Length: 345
Length: 261
Image (cartoon, rainbow over all chains, first blue to last red; front, top):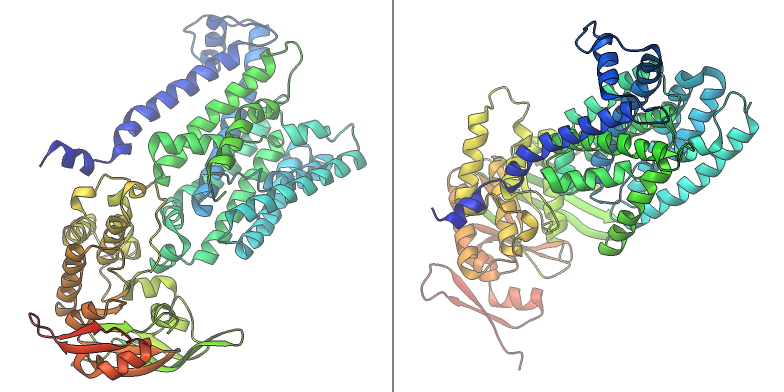
């Protein structure tokens, strides 16, 4: 066998997976370390370590001061974990949408699912706080996702039309988020900029726990369906010939995606472009096979959202910028590039 | 000849007011290569899609290995037949081997299926189609002919007893075309039922055991190659003067296009 034949026989993504996934892991850990250390009050690395080991009952770095405990464990750690969980969830849903719709531009927020979920989340937050927001987000996310699925069935061969329909649907639903917020008790319901631009401030351990449980179930379902998403990524007709009930499978996947997006919106509002940018880059890193792509995108999504949140906190200190502005500033140009690059959006 | 494994009885298919297939009867049995011929718009691809269960007849019945397509799940159909469609996707970032491995999807819930049988089926399919040396290549970087061979390998890896092919050699050069058709004939001789749409009448003449000549959604004539490939019939159906002579080197008819003047 010649060298050329050997290189043609080996999976070109396998080597990239071997070094790509550990690098993503290291980047995520680094961003997590910076996220709990930096902010309005700088906490020394030793104090951060003392807080985190102290929680585990270990005394390796001495005793942490009460301010360090309050800031690191009470404020920054839940914010960090919320960023990791939500970033991972958004990137996983984006990976599945892009795969099954065969479009790099499929993103849960661009398709209108996020804005739809935000209506339910805003209503839910008026009665049940964050838990109510997550429950409302899930319900409205599922309904909106179902509507998007119906639009997709009508335009299954025209991804451009589907994306444009989603953008239009999102614009309409975003306006309704505004109506709901302004008609609600504004001392209880978070402001419009939280819902439309997102924010990790105010994340609590309870909210992190709820979001984690919901997203664990939803992303678990997406991972179980990874091989089927691969077949859909080759083509609906090919998938059908291989035994996939395409209509039923895509409807279920849309519902799961809607529920997962609803959780993220209920917890932190709409954070755009995580589900667009991260799967796009992860696919180039580890290849298109979804059982590798989804975990890689989840790592990348956590890293991206935590890093964006850090920038949101530090860029114009002491003012905190909505995290969705940072993700849009980074993801928007990519969206433009993709839209101009692809003949078929 | 053994019992037909693929049967269409009085099948019609209509879209709105247009009839694409009308009262068509069809059958194919294990061990034979059956060709579906006809000019553009004759209904060849529609018939193949009806036979695969992808389309359901407006009236009539299609059965695959005794299963009625209208009442069988996609999963059940996928274990009974494999399909090489007319359109081969091109913009796919998966590796060649990943694509061929997808052919094993119908067997994932079969308790008798093992990783070793998956591996063996994929390796064998890639060897038969000459795609083993392309295993690590990204599909989007291949020529249209190479892509077709990859999708044919996926069809073979599926190991279904009935194989439906829509113009399997449309984008292949002469050498690859002959090799692929010889492989499909070998599959038929090993007990598979092979049904293939052909535009190349001479390929059909050599490789098919029986052919169905369609025109306007109906069967114009069916039978052995010698019974169907006749100068008068072909000239009328294709609206092009043709002469059928004995092939000088092969034991089959040779169809020649004749100058209309």
